[in-house]
Image 1 (tube, rainbow, N blue to C red):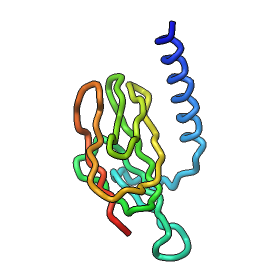
Image 2 (cartoon, rainbow, N blue to C red; image 1 turned 45 degrees about the horizontal axis):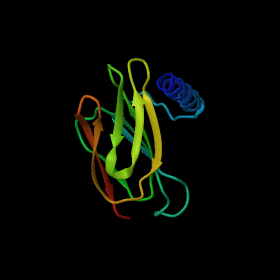
Image 3 (cartoon, rainbow, N blue to C red; image 1 turned 90 degrees about the vertical axis):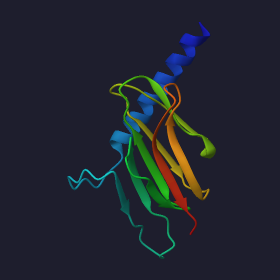
Image 4 (tube, rainbow, N blue to C red; image 1 turned 30 degrees about the horizontal axis):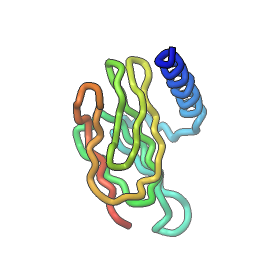
Length: 128
């Protein structure tokens, strides 16, 4: 019974995140690049918003303080994790995991699928 409640809670949470992601305005120029960066107005040290899709063959590079939106595509139910940053999310067929966070720790971090124990990319956060 507890497992069903957890599964239901997770499904409702993912649905809410998917709807919120779908309603977020995006700059879609038709480019299928893995990473795009949109500079914020203001000073040169203002954070950028970085959109990244995993699996990614090349490391995704961001600066400390950037707002990062990661989308993970998976063919089976799994859990994406950037463990050293404490970031996790559920993924599965037809359910891409949109994860938004502030890159606040410099370093290089593997992006993994936990259940299949597979690394699907790398996130590199450079100090400002």
